Length: 192
Ligand code: GRF
Image 1 (cartoon, helix red, strand yellow):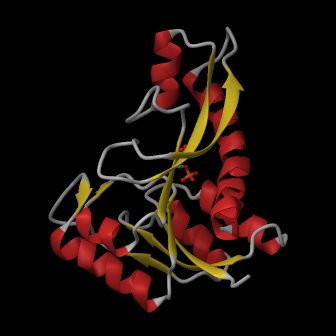
Image 2: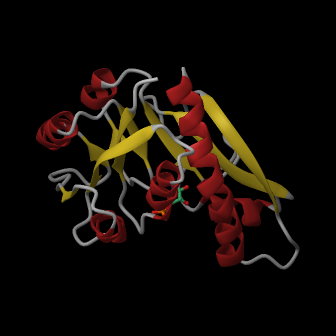
């Protein structure tokens, strides 16, 4: 089986990226991270990638704030292609992808979301779960389409909500499951 080259896009601290890198290092995933790109200058994900000797780039998403489109999309595509990326994993990337990138990687872009979709799409899903009084929540790895947190589900992991959970404690437990779910989901895709 040919080794897959993954490109990771993220805006935050990069714990999911690190869990994917760890799975690769541990021989649990037949892949290589070709590059990491962030739309946030100085984001933790870039520091962590550099520490792991993974090519890491800040690429502005300007002039847009919440989507990746136009010239910005082309800038991302160029770097992904330059690094031979075959599979794109969004890990806390805070922009909506548009047609240019989706068409360049049909069924090859995946995302992780901190809820059991279709429940609680959008921002701060763990807070939504608490506000709603949900007894279970979790995380979902799914294919990315033109919607927000829509797209076919690949894998989900359940987290029980405790009576005394705070947004912080619940998010931390969801993230523990994310770090198992993302490498596992990538494994199922890479195997195909
Ligand atoms: C994760 O909770 C993920 O579900 C959400 O953004 C967060 C990213 O965390 N989409 P990290 O940067 O991987 O630590």
